[in-house]
Image (cartoon, rainbow, N blue to C red; front, top):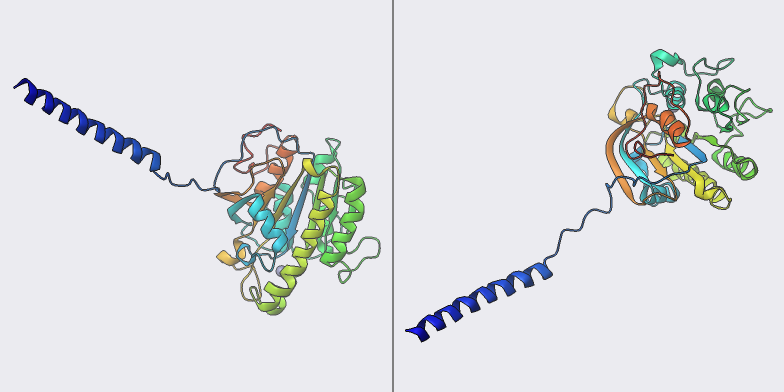
Length: 320
Ligand SMILES: [Zn+2]
């Protein structure tokens, strides 16, 4: 009787042991699902951004960027923080859109409605004007004459583009802009630099958005300039303190970009900073109006109360 009870107890103990061992084995061999390397918040760390280079590629659709036609932009997208849902303003024309990008304001406040060269410059302060009040320097390198309207000549330390120093629109190719950026930024290292490259927009109007010319000639020429600008930054002693943003004023479909279509509205928005976690993305919506407050915030400067854009997700909790 005792023997029978003992053997039954032993059997139960053995069974329990087997169950425990199988459980432990299962635990050690369990393959936890790999957490995505992407979609992670940018860690809160003191950023110490001293320079921002904002590159706007006129008419660049985010779905047109790929490893082959835009290897430099693609690399920034892969290595930086990529916002998959970014939009321009409803009035998706070059001048009104850039006015919103650089002021953080909607069209009914900055009132830049026309899309053609105009004398003087807009009343609403853009990033260079706001930074000049805080002893920071700015430069603007652009490829269309109408862009002069966005920058106060007395508060922008350096301007390069058509209408300035005898330059004409035919001169200001992406390549020339990249060369001038190398020459000027390499020595002066402005706190804020705006770079505007027009090639994809020109090609979209002439041959169609997503046409062979748009994808395989215009985007690569803008991308080469981006590569050269990145090279200039990386060769400087300011590289570790320089944040680069790649975006656009609008997308496009067929031969234009002002019908409020999804293809007109969606823009790329990529931030690359060497001190931040690489290879991450956010699918929170970003407006082009968020660009100005985000840049002011990153440079540690106050954001005017009337700005309607907000600091983009991922940077909001940072203490620059
Ligand atoms: Zn256009």
